[in-house]
Length: 428
Image (cartoon, rainbow, N blue to C red; front, side, top):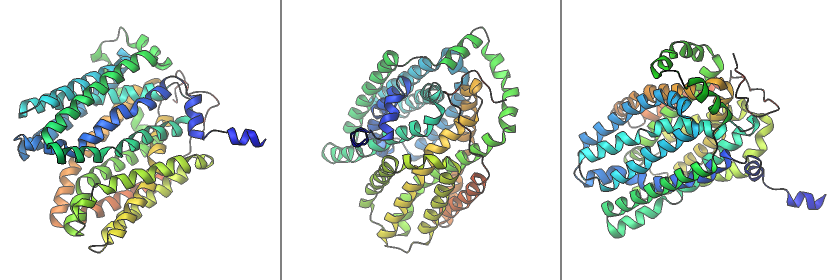
């Protein structure tokens, strides 16, 4: 008995061993994307600005990206059904990242950056296909664990972010970012090759490819008139969708205005800004690896409700924090990280468990389109609030967290089947 206990592996390791094929391959490949992305992301805007791209042009690029992403997200489900989850994922990685990164690597004017942004929007098609490829043949009981692994992959990548800062201090922004974009392109080409070699089309993907083989794209678009009402009438899906939009908006506002708020209003030195994402990642990793699997018995609603309460509490702490109190900002980051660890994997899994598996690709595409389209005005809105008082964007975040708390309090925990997610049994 003692030997058996000692040899028992961590539940997350057991999950990877149990979920052979697509889930394990895609999870293990995630750092190929996450590491170069996190090396580049903090300096992407500076890379453009240093090469003469104006503030207005940067704003135009962001607006164009948002509009094209909504369009590509809308068509993502149709393309995923017709071409298959595996091929669409490979296409999105190749055009949306590999080729886009090659263009970014040589960009020196507005038009090159615009071309890269347009190609990168293919990634929205890839998102729909990738999530289907990840979870469709997995056991429904394993979804929280699988999404936990996806989050872990992204969090580990954050620890590499300071490397680009050190390189830039030695070699300046433009040459370093050019090389990193080239590395990114090579990584994504490797990812495409691994996907081709080790991933298999899902059972539901094969069914949808056969069903849509002779169906014109225009007819599939027309079919949205029946699909959209079904999504809107599914109360459980709508509850999770509203919470997803709230979290997307909150993350958008936090990402855009946290650094400005803590440096300009609270007087925290800018040198500490690089420390906060690493602290957030460390806390989330500790929680996901050490505690997450111990919460399986309480399912979804209670952990998500607690996480949203912590989100709201962290916002209140930030609003009320006096100037110069770095300790309170550290506590804020800690509480926010615990909240994210509780909420994010469960939110993603809960959404997949409540949608009709027969229409997973198109429903996911619709949800992504709705989320991006609905969230897009809130960047401007938060900026307008911040122009009046830098606390107001976080007051707004606090208020929508309260709304999310009320909604999550009314969700139902899904019942798990005794088998894998059934690709042929619809909910309706």
